[in-house]
Length: 629
Image 1 (spheres, helix red, strand yellow):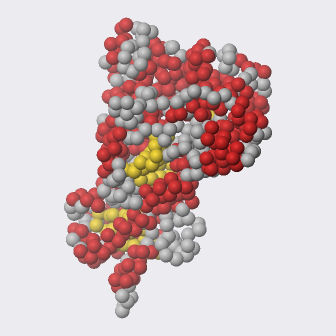
Image 2 (cartoon, one colour):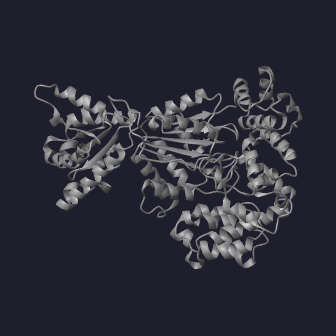
Image 3 (cartoon, helix red, strand yellow):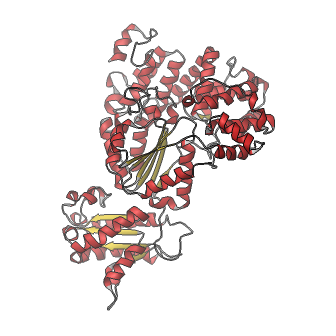
């Protein structure tokens, strides 16, 4: 396999710095990791211009030795830098700007936006001999780490693409690898990634239409080709906070986690706006593919101000990315993002996902094992609104219960419900509810409804512990632990539970499924609902760090307060967790030290009848002023 080429762009007036760099990178060349190229390799009588162009075309990495000499060279700026930046946009070439000597680099727009070496754009020449060699060795190690990302099937000539330096997609929900009827949307997303003028793509559709499945399919396609030059890939799902737009939620944990992942040494410092802008700056330093799945919990519901982002940090981050972004941010949501509407048609593209076509619905039902003529399957698809989740549940239900007979669909009652709220899918979920009556599968679905996020094994065990909860865990005493696993597999076969790759300690399901069975349990068995939340309150309160130091560590305590409020233990949650451990009494730790105002508003909303109307009567009079303040 051909070794990746590293191209060095420099001014001949800085040849001494180039030679020092080459001596460090020469170690990698000696070890057979790369092919190092600078213009001193051009032989006598060769066409020097042609050789430089060939070397730039072939290079996977370009190192820029920046100085005043470099920034005032017409040839370097017009012939080399412009070509290298073009290769970065189209092919994912890695560019390493190194500040060799002090210069006004921060006044050069294209350069000031990049990730500079050494750190913070400090010049190499400012150190003594030891520090200079230390910095150059660190750069050589960084180059080595990147070129190790060469795909095994790289071709033996021409440009060798590099895989991303870092990838984090574990927080995205799992979906089926099979996708039907979304060829045009996949092509549109490929076009958006290849277009340097497109900064954000927003996939807008009702719940259950298949936004997440489309994103995951596109990511699998991208991964098969080394992510088409992305330098970093980061994904996050906000569905862990629920799927309803009318909930009070926060992006604090996302922003803190992302800042830490992108290399911010102090991710908890600054106001929400400052954190959002700082995160955008980190994202823009490299060609980043950012996935934000299920944004609607952080948006205002339809009506006045509908679609506007509630969290100031996330709002400022997205507006910064809409202005400039060398990579791409992909959003999936039920509502158009109002905050970036001014950029639509320019740097922001909305892709509206319609329901599947009847033909695609037929293919999906066949894939799930449904039997019938094409016309019967097409009619079934139409009757269920060509709705992806509804058809997935329908196909699984017919296959499991009726051997795949499509004509048995008339046994599924027709519910009157608004389509955007998942009415077609609810029809099938109600049939499952009846079919699983008296079986552990139904109790597992009710338990999933208690959680607002993927359910970890320890939390499920907290609900399952004795004494039993009547109507929720009381039936499990009839069944063995083997039957529990059998019930889980049946629910996964029915597509009611997600198959979590590599995460056997967590259970998850589609947000519409979670909300449907949670609402059923809350309305039909309120005592069980409260007792389950009470156990989760104790579980998270007792397993959390006593006094967390970061927003991420605060997560279990935030969950404890939320479950405590659902359990009716408002005063306990306020006294034992919020005041004592989150705010640390008069220290006001979370608000003053962490600046986690969004998260605090989220959990404080549980002490009101509805945000921000009237404080619950259960709160002591002496604490009502505290909550309001």
